Image 1 (tube, helix red, strand yellow):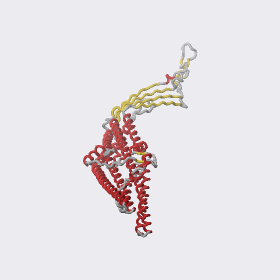
Image 2 (image 1 turned 90 degrees about the vertical axis):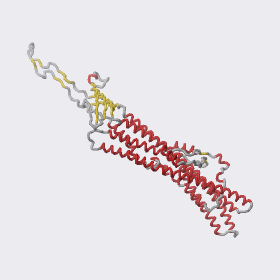
Image 3 (image 1 turned 180 degrees about the horizontal axis):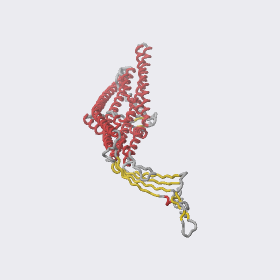
Image 4 (image 1 turned 45 degrees about the vertical axis):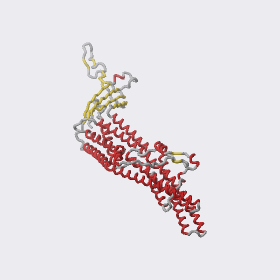
Length: 535
């Protein structure tokens, strides 16, 4: 940068011509666009890399675990019972936690959401800084100096220039006849005050574009903040129902284990009486072992689910704390075209990519006009400098040693040759814009596939839920018939218990199907950016 020196050599002041501010705005406008390279289609933006990924995987495997548990009981005759859904008499006195309460607690506690808020606040400061670059800047400096050897002044002593004859004197008179002080001895102290005002006058729209780029960055931060909150609510929803399913799974499997132990004990007594074979006893004991193994696995899944929910809401669940919100099971009619249109209009990921394209376009304009030999920047500089050797108010005649100067400078700056650096910067901005556009095209091409897959998963989950309901209804009817038959001595207690175990396994499968529907709803809602089913 070419510096314009002040008229007073001892200050060496220069006019920076707001180059730093323009360059900073160009960087801020360009950097967000460069982040498009980290936005593959269908991703959850930057928030998917959060620490939740280390805590929630246990919940994702819970439906598969329940499917394994149900498969282990597939040989049991299906029947039904309401026992697993009944509340004990003292359950009304237990503390309750609704899904909405859990989400509110997570919002208050979430570090991820707090970081997103900081990002938004930082984006607001970027807007303030960009706007400030268009306003004048005022700087000042005060100095006090002390010289150990200030030098000497200039004086002519009496008679130093010789003598001159006079008519009335016998001897010539010295010249000069008195000491003459041409310049007094300088003092050891020097005080100086400097102040400067700099105002950009014309920058070919770079400062205006910098403000626009910063405002777009703030809007991106706002969208990502809302998306982070939506992701958090979805994670809490999955964790909440994961805990509910895990709790019920442990309860059902414990009841099944007790029933199979009773069956095994009955077969052991019958074997001793010669009414059962040894193989039948071993088969019953094997069923007890399988059920116990399934219960232990369910307990481990229960602990993982509770840890995940505790991490999200910031506290441990109470032992008697009851989760009272039921999962959503009503599935609306799904129109593929309408869902795709809603995803295009409301998807936060797509909106962020669009905003980044706008930022990249602005960054490209800024780079085209920065350091251009045909577009000089203009600025005004006003500098005030005053100084003296005596401190004002403390030393006599201080004003005699002070002087003041004002310098007004109007300057233009242009770059004649930079070795190709600006051309490379413009090319980088063009690549950022092209990358952002390609990312949007790729997202738009993948969006119909994502929406169709999510809708298909929801339809499959709905069909499985209907099947599970039918199985449970049949299982309950078989249990009723078994109870009537047992009361009339038409079947054994083992057959009655087998009917009840069938009912419990059907309830467990229904719970798994309800969780699958809830998760499929959440996934589709995340894609289209709105709620499909309210409670």
